[in-house]
Image 1 (spheres, helix red, strand yellow):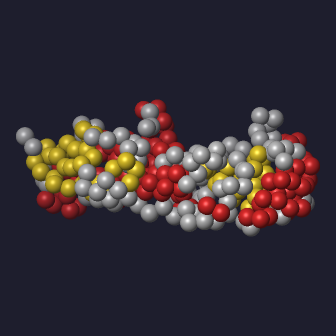
Image 2 (cartoon, helix red, strand yellow):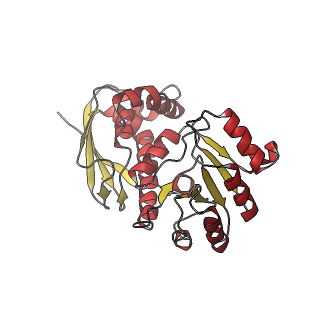
Image 3 (cartoon, one colour):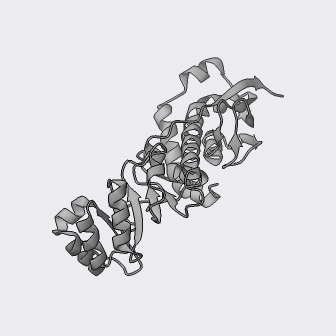
Length: 285
């Protein structure tokens, strides 16, 4: 769960942006039916099985509209939830509940969907010692939320952004003039505390990366038999990451190759939302 400092520094501006996207000048529908403040309560109900994630973000949407809004939870991030389950009750000014509903649910549904899908993939790697990683293939301005959801689902974060580490991909290698030259230049420029990872697409590139002293070698879009040969060629001299169109449906074919990491953009770009609703809004005294 996000702490108060993280929320205020990083999440609040993004949540406020999402609210401004939904409310340009006023919520005309709510203002039409609620002319003045009125206390109310609404129930948060899960409509399908999954892993819940993003409760603090869900709550923050409402408290940014009205700081007096209160949420009483029956679950916490990472819990397994089921269809029909009551997850929480939200109490506050009905105008705030109505105006924040869609934005709050958008975050909660999206984050819970990612956590749920990640959990289903991570389970397939149980007992292998392989770490399941996400990528930078995230929704613009939502990376902080989506990568958090991957962790809640049992996955691990790859670099958060371009500042975090050196990852020499095909176009970097092309710009540098080859694998060896790209690694040499990275070692010369990057701080010594940063690992250097290089993306490879053939056994020849793998051999060059090993010889040049890469810390991590990514085997990108290779067939399983080629990846097995690459792992033998590397022989412990670098960590190994597998990447390239990895999904829940095809991960079985690569999990026994003796690698360290498997990264999957599908964790964030292809996870369906988890269906969750706010229902039974009523006034309270």
